[in-house]
Amino acid sequence: MTHCGVEQYVFATTRDGRQVDGFTLCNAHGMTASIITYGATLVQLFVADRHGQLADVVLGFDRLDQYETESPYFGCIVGRVAFRIAEAQFTLDGATYRLTRNCGRHHLHGGRRGLSHVVWAAEVVPCPDGPAVKLRHVSGDGDEGYPGQLDVTVQYTLTDENALKIQYTARTDKPTPVNLTHHSYFNLAGARSGDILDHILWIDADQYTPTDEELTPTGRIEPVRGTPFDFTTPTPIGARIHQVGGYDLSYLHNHPHGTLARVARLHQPGSGRTMDVLTTAPAIVFYTGHYLDGTLRGKGGCAYGKFAGLCLETGHPPDAVHHPEFPDVILRPGQVYRQTCVYRFSTADGARVPAD
Ligand code: G6D
Image (cartoon, rainbow, N blue to C red):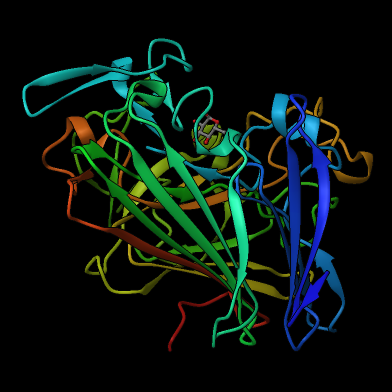
């Protein structure tokens, strides 16, 4: 079935027999984005290089069962609360809630069956900005240990400015933490082209939130100046990665949150592809996919090795529920959680700080 710029199809069936639909959005320049209802996951993103040659720039799988059983969150929507919650528990309004421990003694990315591992409802929606699909999931009271029924929507829109816009809303009937993100692993040379160490990265953030040896935030907010985390000048990702082993940290960017602002630019010199990241959220997590080890067989049978793709995940800082000095993540009845993230593609110069 084809709508204006959207093709809908049956992608596959889950192991427990539920149909998973796919939606391919296509804009006026031939850029396409394909999303499936399992995990509201972006499974393909074809973007032109400086010569107009399209390539798929996100890692992923050919088969649904791989997304169900072995995905390191390739392309999915993550929540209720993305990133780690230390000790898999939190206290809210005097009550303590115990969450699924799925990362040692901590809670990661919404638990074992978080938003990334459910089948969302979906519909093609009219949108003046371009072809769009809106997905919805209602997470029940007590899901993975979280209080309240959480009604979540995510809308993917592909604009004629070659931007993939992701708009989140959430509503709750009890106070509960919410922090949603999108977890694509990007490789702007193409998803089958090796590692991302030659990509040039700029992050408009003077501060980051350090973590302990278990990657849970210490609660401090530190300057990036003088550290290998400083990307306030466009820098090849491989230039200092030997000092840190891999990047897996959250930055507090330099823009007021609540307004859509460009907070990062990623450029791959060989193809000329450039990706700007814009968000209304206060933070961006940079992760270099260093836990990939060649054992996963991705699209077309491609073995994804270390650093095969990188993530730029917008949202609130990790473990904010335990750190009052971080931007608040508590959603209360009557409030609406609204965040927007945009991945905008061009062949703009990535070697210098963006002027516009
Ligand atoms: C690891 O610490 C990293 C996370 O940032 C990432 O999201 C996950 O692997 C896929 O836990």
